Length: 70
Image (cartoon, rainbow, N blue to C red; front, side, top):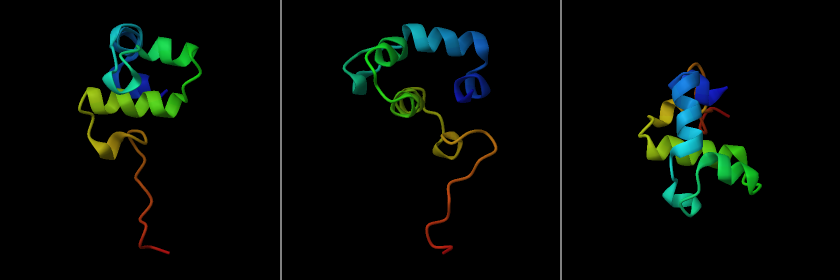
């Protein structure tokens, strides 16, 4: 869902299939999933590779928890 929200369904499929992720030993997202890599780790690697702003790494309408608000 995060991939589709961020990139749209068609481009998300292309990225997952074709984007070689340096930090995952040049595996694509699809290869990494097949190798049992945590989907969250793959998502974050894609975010970094595509320069997705950190404020959108949790989703379009989600914000990180304020560590000081406890």
